[in-house]
Length: 462
Length: 108
Image (cartoon, rainbow over all chains, first blue to last red; front, side, top):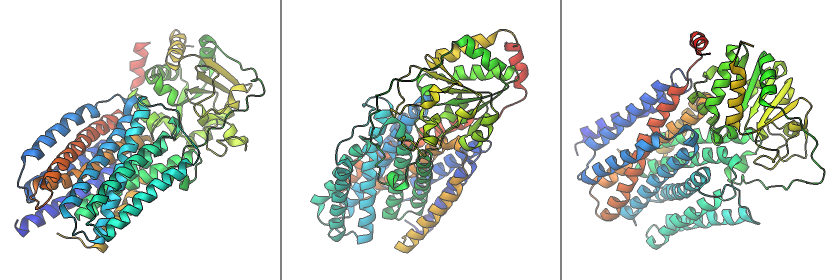
């Protein structure tokens, strides 16, 4: 290979790096986001084409087959329904981690035993992080797709077992760093983290998924950066660092929004203990309302805030919610949406669903901003959300979610909650909101109930 | 071009700082597309897999070919799927338009 072509390739990678950074920068606002995606695509294209043309590649057959096959698998993964985006994202973390792990493994067998200690340490890190992210993400995807049981499985000493596994893997890696020639040990730093990935996700319940997905995102990025160290590729180091940083920021955001400490997140020990409810006292009475009554209250309001949660996604109610939004705004009612950071199963999940239903994004308001508006709001309509509206998080120090920031729907004049039944929410925590005098329970399926609200509001101009 | 250890660490550190500053500014509205986009960008690892499969190796060339090919498939599916879905998502985000009022009036 001539030295000239090497410089050209380095230059191409430099351009790709700049495009990647611009891509993320332009994603900061919905108005420039498409440009951002385009920049990312262009950067990827020049980097891949440059690599194909310039490196000392002697055999193209397998590469061509693999690229075509990958594209064939990728297209349906790009076309999944918006409600399935969390599991698709988890699956793509698994694929990314798989790629990194396999390349790391191959690199080891090509280079062993002449591997310098630094290279061997980052290679171990690449393989350990990659394989635990691979099985962890597959588990997360399985839970989100409801192939696997969603209830968290916990047992005594779980964290000890998990940390122990990780400790053994790191110890084996240390031996390999000292003597990379011990090829018989290498499979251990693949196998142990693969088991660890499964064990790590077993105690995770659905409500913790936003944090877990963000964390796996971060791990996937860090393993790719480690791969960049091994392959001495600046482009890969940078892309991995960007992905790692993004996952890290989202994990911190999510853990703040659930009032979990950061170490809690780092060690993946987010499977909070499921406290059984003190089922002593009988539940106080609740007030319920029919669609007609609820529609009349909505029609008489001038400011309405809708608070969606995972229940809206499950019921696929977002398009009905859009119809409701149309009816209400048509009557001159100001309608906004209050979005809690952990509503749904991944960061930003609710925003994507509501945007899919054509609700303008300037009506989707973050928790802190909407909370200032709520005391002047006539009606808060909670659709399929529970813990994120639970005033116990603010008032009851004994509550397991005490300290978690919530959307203060209880400060509005009237609260309406669409809910299937009085069964406790996902985390099994009772919600005092339901027993307040200003609260009306609207029992039923989110989609059909919102549908009947829409037909009630359909006729006349109020 | 070979990279020495300190240069690699400098590159990583600076990229991490840039990542923090740039990504902190991403609106929470777009956190889902952010994740699918960074995922697609992360699949640049395909470059490493391509080199692994395409190059001549003195030892372990069989392993390199098999594992590398699977790695390319996995990364390419992330690139294609990731960019497709990110573009679909960001296209859905529209600001409210006053024009909509007329359209609605006709509907109801």
